[in-house]
Structures are given as structure tokens and as C-alpha cells.
Length: 260
Image 1 (cartoon, rainbow, N blue to C red):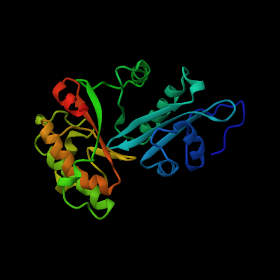
Image 2: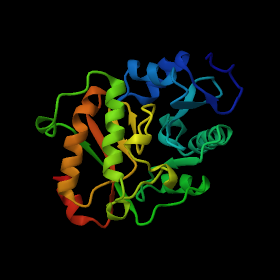
Image 3: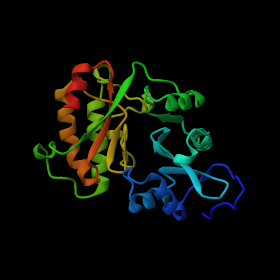
């Protein structure tokens, strides 16, 4: 996509493969590579990238989102240091919200840090409803869990289905025992493995090299270790090296265990 002529403001714009070099200059050192960006910018069915340009036509800010079940999940806004303090993040978030409305998804979702006044202000403007009780987001590598599991699946489709089935088994009839029940999936779609069609990862989504979980289908740390060990071979077959999972802020013993 060619930069806008100097002095013009076309508002937030959907970005594509032609914008990869400019986008990379804004997201450097954020786990993005040229290959990852090319894949995401060329896959509007899963990822959405929107950008906002300065009067000189260069990108001032970008915001990315991905489809996660019935939601468009906002994950990553990057603003040029010279543009901080303006309304770029807000304008891009509103643009992605309009995309969600046009695609008839259930809504938008995002992780919001209570320590970030900017994120809190943006969440309020977007009318996001906070989860209760508050949650913390942890990233855990799969390394160390692969030794006690079976051989990785031979292809991504099988690996995706295996992730679905593992999570479905952990969810089946046990929501009331979970540390964190599912945050995104419709209650009537919490079906067992027999209802899965292999086309999407339910209650989870692959994002770059991470598997994002929208629940913590475990009652304690021991069950979490078992779940990660069970997920590890399928995650490896999908090129995933870590998992992001929500943890109740009040679960201090588990938080200390995860931090260690």
C-alpha cells in the first residue's frame, strides 16, 4: 500500500503485505520477523493489521488483532515514539471494533494491565467489561514438559485437532472446578471431542510461537503440569514454544510457583 500524499489523513487503514517493511520498523524487537509479518499481513482471515499515517505519509502507529473463537482479540499496538500521547491507539482500536461489528463477531477482547493507565483508559473508551475476579497473564515455555509425552503428530492439521481434543477433555463437565473458566467461548459450544471438526483450536489460538489459552482448565499446579505435558507434542508440531495462560490474581501460591 502506497503512503498517503503528504498533508493528507486517510484515517486508520487496513495493512497488507506491501506494508511489511514499514510495519517492521515499528515492531522491531517484539518477536516479529519479516517472515512472521509477511504471514500475518497476508492472512486477513485470521489476523487484522491496521495503521495510521503521519501527514508526511509514513506510518505513525499500527495495531494488530486476531480472530479467537467468537471474538476479535486485540493484541499489540505500536506507536512511533514521536507520536506518543496522541489519539493514535484509540483511533486504531475503534477501527478494529468496527471491523468486528462488520464481521458479525460477538465482540472484541483484550488483556489490560491494571498498572497501565493508558491501557485502562483505552479499555474504558472501548467499553470493555473487566473480568471478575482479576486475572494475571503468564507465559510458560513448553521446554521441560516434552520428555514425558508421545511422539509429535506428523502434520499441523493433526496437531491442531490434538490440541482441540486435549482441551475438550479437560473442559468436559468440569468447568466449576477450574481455576479460570473459559473467558471467550459461548457456553453452548463447550462440546466434547466428538463435536470438533478439526478446523479451529477451541478455547485456544496459535499466535506466532505461542499457544494462547482462554481458560485454565486445572484445579491446581499438578494438573497444570499434566496439561502442559499433554499439550507439548502437538504444540511442537505447530511450531509453538510457549503457552500464555490466565491465572487468578488471588492464587498467590500458584503465582509464586509460576514465577519460579
